[in-house]
Image (cartoon, rainbow over all chains, first blue to last red; front, side, top):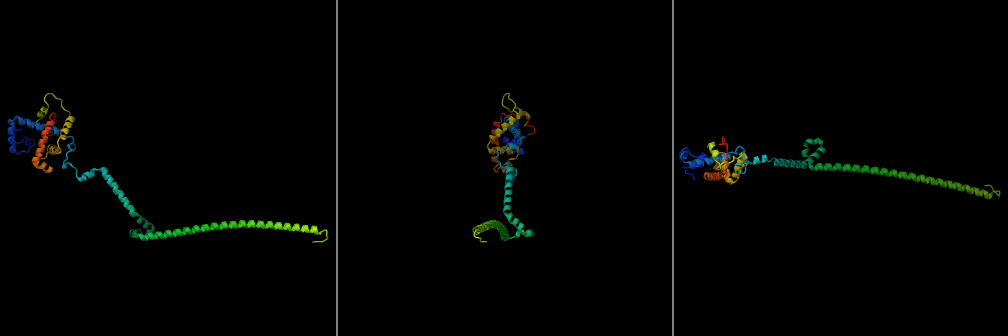
Length: 202
Length: 93
């Protein structure tokens, strides 16, 4: 316990008025205990300050004081990974949003390039109707062409078969003709042979 | 305060002079032994050099509370750091 007229710690931290400070100094000149107490305070502060050069604000970062907490924008700015993740999320959202909006514009550009300047105002229903119309026409043309090709192939196959049948029939007719001619000759021969002894000429 | 006082403030008898890293660790341990309120007071007063009125405004409490926290912390630190020898404190005051 100090015998000083004022608190020695206030004196040590220079928190006394000049008159009070003078009184303490006068007392200390005659009091060795107070001088020792002041010396101990000075040594304690020296020990604390001996680590002051080693970045004291970080060394005492465990202090739960609002004064040392970074502002919200400092926390956001210093959080690199979080900022990068947020940027990626925003970019992904922008891409998805653009992809959901882009098909109307792209289709309108393909169907009406002359009206590219006003493509943003093209009605979606009109565009869909035009697309359906063109698709139907293209399908109809493709079906007609396929039918034509099928008919041509069928006609060719029928002609080939007819020619084959005609060739086969002709050969049969020729064979029949030959047979009949040969039969006729044989009959003539038989008849001549039969009537020659009788003196009957054919 | 003068350097002669600092040199003589140590444990009685011959003792080895502590390395700077040892002093640093001892101070760190001493600060960690304080409560958060006491550490706040020590930091604001010793390291930052605020006046009691400024500390009271920063901490949002009366000056008497600030002084009580600081002085209690200093008493604890005096006991914890009693074995610490500080060789050269010139320029740190």
